[in-house]
Image 1 (cartoon, rainbow over the protein chains, first blue to last red):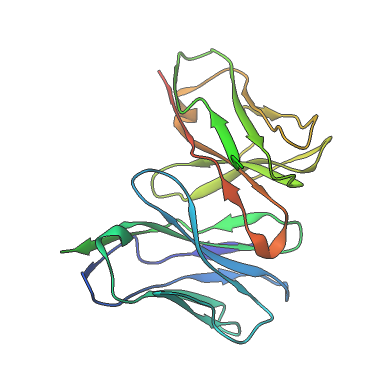
Image 2 (image 1 turned 30 degrees about the horizontal axis):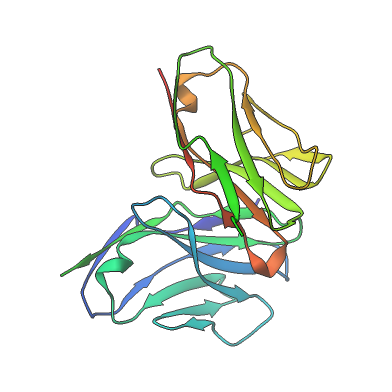
Length: 113
Length: 112
């Protein structure tokens, strides 16, 4: 069975600081895609960043970057220069053959002014 | 380009009532899914479709039905609402793989 584990239910960070959210996953497949989604209080699910499993290079989108460790099945999200608008629930997810999303249980991030 | 449109945004049902949550996408995506979100449990897959006329069960399908007669529409039917179905429901669509899923804005359903 495929699973995604986010071991940090809640985290906080001071504004302008850096924070890392952890995610591990389990799959027997070799080809898959990994994602981080953000869900602010508005409830909308917003794609933050994505990574292809066969690419060694870690994905980066402005202040957001990932640390992808394929052998360890780890996919952490780093948010640099945290802003108040980053306060949200963050979900790790992956897709493999069959195109079904498997989600973690989420990490609630609070940015403190 | 509206993306994924879900209606209604809020709904209150009495136990035993039935209703349909509507979902439509205008991106010509093959893949569509329904999820429910409950506190501490992330998003759990209810039903999914890989194209018009093709549907299958996800992780928590009991009490729900779906159909996909067109590429655009993927309604979710609650057959006989129960308090355990109180949740936030999301519809999502995808063109596959790397593109991930585009989500609707969600429906908050309360069953009393």
